[in-house]
Structures are given as C-alpha cells and as structure tokens.
Amino acid sequence: MTAAPYDAIVLGAGAAGLMCAAVAGQRGRRVLLLDHADAIGKKILISGGGRCNFTNIHTAPDRYISANPHFAKSALARYTPADFLALVEAHGIAWHEKTLGQLFCDGSAKQIVAMLMEEAAKGGVTILHGQPVHEVVHGADGFGVTFGERRFTAPALVVATGGPSIPKMGATGFAYDLARRFGLKVVEPRPALVPLTLGGDDLLFRELSGVAAPVEARAGNAAFREAALFTHRGLSGPAILQVSSYWQRGDPVTIDFLPDAAPGWLVEAKRARPRATLASTLAPLLPARLAQTLADRLALPGELAAQTDRKLVDAEGRLKRWAFHPNGTEGFAKAEVTVGGIATAGLSSQTMMAKSVPGLYAVGEAVDVTGWLGGYNFQWAWASGYAAGQAL
Ligand code: FDA
Image: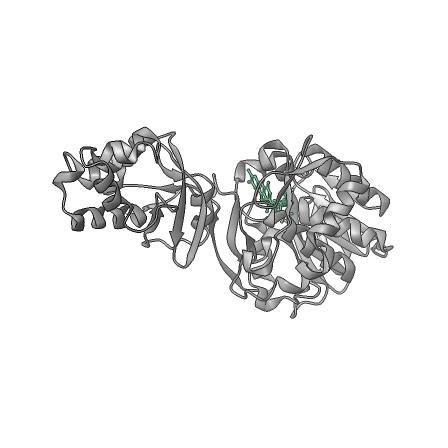
C-alpha cells in the first residue's frame, strides 16, 4: 500500500464535519471528507424552515445538556457565535435576529452550505459523497476506511456522522457503533427537541389540535416560556420541544397557561365581574377553544359568584401547574436532535480526541452534548468541529 495521501479522514459532511475539515485544511492538513448521502449538509438545508438558525447570541454552556455539563465550555469559548457571524458576514450572507437571540439567514440555508463548501475548498479538502462507508479499521497504517469500492487511510479519523434524528435524511447511529467498537462509552441516546404524545385522560386535549398559546412549560427542573401547540398526537411548539429534552419517561410535564397572571387574579375577577362564568373569564386570556376546554375540565359551572374563593384559588393553581402525562415522544423520526451520544468522559474537551485512541476524534451531535432549540446545536457543531480542526 502507498503512503496515506491524507492527514485526516472526516466521516460526515454535515455542520460539524464541514467546519472541522475546512479548519484543518486551512491549517495545511490534507483532509478527506466522506459522506454517504446524495447531497452535502442536508440537515443544514432543512434547518430553520430553510433559513438555517445558524447560531444563538446567548450561547452559554448552561444551555446544553450533557452527562458532564462542563465538557462543552472549552470549545464554546474558543469558537463563539461572534466568530461564526464574522464568517457569515465575510461571505456577504445577509442575516437577522428573529427572537431570543436566534440568528437566521435572510435568504436561504443553501448559503450556509455554500459558505462551508467554499471554506473547505480554500483548505483544499477533498469531498466525496454518495457511497456507503463499508468498513473502518485501525492498524499500523492508521485508520482505514472503505468508501464504496475505494479504501483510504490516514493517521487521524474524525467521526462527524451526527445522531439518529430524522433517519429519512440519512441520519444513522453509525457514530455510536463506531465509538463502541473503539471502546468508547455511549450515553443512551434518546430523541430530543421532539413533540410529546398524550394518552389516557389527556387524550381529550387532542380535540384542540392546531391551537397554540404562550405558556410556561416545565419538565424536571427545566422551564421554558414560549408557545405550546396542541397536535392530533399530543403536544408540540417551542416550549414543549425545549422541555422534551429534559423529560424522562413517566414524569409529568406541567404547563402554566397564564404565566403573567398575578396570584389571586381569579378571586379578583369574581369581585370585579361576579356574573361572569369561568369560560368567559378565561376567554380574553387564552384561545377560545382552549379556554372552553380548560373551563370544562375545571368543572366550575355557572357564575363566578357561585364559587367559593377556595375553589377559585384551587382552579388558579391548576391553571398554573396543569399536569400532562405524556406516554412517549414522536421519536427519532420527528426529533430535531438527540440527547446522549458518545460519552464525553472518553474525549478531550480541548481537542475532541478520544483519550484511549490517539488520532480518533468525535464532533457535533454524535457527542453527548445537546443544545436548546434556537441555533444552539449548530453552534456546538461549529465549535466542536473547530476544536478538532485546530488539533488535527
Ligand atoms: P449532521 O446530521 O448535520 O451531519 C452528519 C452527516 O453525517 C450527514 O451529512 C450524514 O449524511 C452523514 N452520515 C451519517 N451517517 C453516515 C454514515 N454511516 N456514513 C457516512 N456518512 C454518514 N439546529 C440549529 O442549531 N438550528 C436550526 O435551525 C436547526 N434546525 C433543524 C431542523 C431540523 C428539521 C432538524 C432535524 C435539525 C435541526 N437542527 C437545528 C439541529 C442540527 O441540524 C444538528 O444539530 C446539526 O446538523 C448537527 O450537526 P452534525 O454535523 O453533528 O450532524
């Protein structure tokens, strides 16, 4: 066999792999980037409704979930949202802040893929795609990868094949299988940023399919104030997607339907409009169908004047902490990301290299680091890709 013409092989031409390959290439490394998909950066293309929410200016380590909450700190500090924004601006891509620090392209997510491809080209990166990766081995000549009919070797291998969310886009659990083969541990992956499904008593809420309301949703210790959406299968919308990443099977998700209401507001309402019903009192505050359903379930018929203050205080408490009992999620088919992945305990937080396998790196969603909704996951992909790209 001839000497390896590459210094590194990066598996997966998604967000993290493209960034890693471009950075390493521009540092003079000879990089081969391989992907099995028919197109490069497919998840980037569908992200943010086609406009790619490429970062979040409020990026901070506490907005990431990992078995080791400190792991992401180093990479996030060394490649920040401002760094990515500078790249976006250098490529003349127009952008805007939508809400909550979320930055989107004005035009199209295609611009982000084109930008990363240009950066990779500047670094002389060879990109091949559209063939399966049959085999990955590690021997005296470094890492060997069989891609389609061809075999490549290099002293370094970067696993950037993402997580299993949205399998129909080419997503696989490949990274986990590979990691396990090299003796790395994997934190049990589960779907995250995913709609929750309802059953049992909560089924009645399915009638509200299509109704959305600004709420505060809570699972465990995490609380998010954004919109919740009722669907024909259960609950979705940004507030629910956010808490889904923290939700553990069997736990309730509680919703505060009136997060701005002052304590005692319902008793106040009775004093101000004693002839009003609970439904008509809720109607100006919530979407009409939701107001009616909640009033029906609270079962306080007739005028407010007919209710004791205690009953009204209890009703107020239920509206503040309405407990839903999801029976599951819509799974990887609908999940935006994966919680869990290659255990960070086996990786260097500086370089993303496996501590026990010199030359093996893991970046992006494949690693047990998961961001909130709103550009945080791409920022992790850029930052971890950059960290490895600097180290190769
Ligand atoms: P990514 O999945 O991007 O790339 C992995 C690559 O590896 C793919 O190109 C895949 O084809 C390839 N691959 C997989 N298995 C392979 C194998 N066996 N052999 C060879 N190649 C293989 N985040 C955010 O911050 N802002 C947003 O707006 C959105 N929007 C969004 C919308 C939707 C619908 C989804 C599903 C996800 C998002 N995300 C997001 C999340 C974001 O897309 C995700 O966090 C990053 O793409 C992760 O980047 P990676 O490079 O790690 O994986």
